[in-house]
Image 1: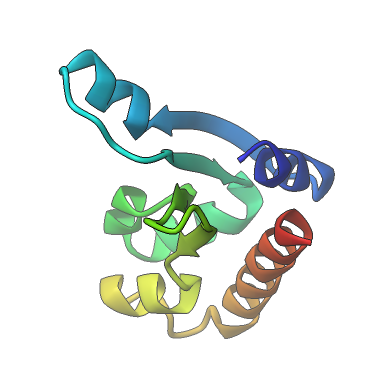
Image 2 (image 1 turned 180 degrees about the vertical axis):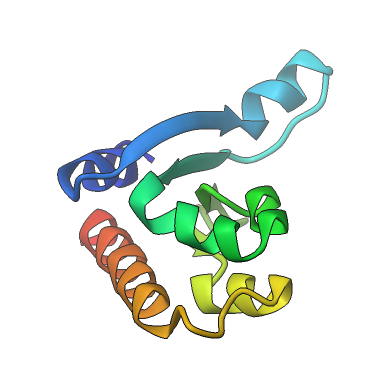
Length: 114
């Protein structure tokens, strides 16, 4: 997660929040393998999509889940921005922006995983 947050910042995006599900589970007296969500983005990328469909605000800023599986391997999961835009009917006319967002997200994740 530290590498992902650093990669997000290095690529000019803002980290808005970090949610530690493992810590939340511990507070409830339960156990959970390391599981965190990073919420991040750039208003220049997200705002045009929300202007097209304000419901995009439920899925923006972008989010990535970093978790550890049963074998101790760490994974990063995220939703494809093109899928999110299609879900809200905001894809049409924003193909170039969605390509840029998708490429940026893939780059951030690849850099963090390297």
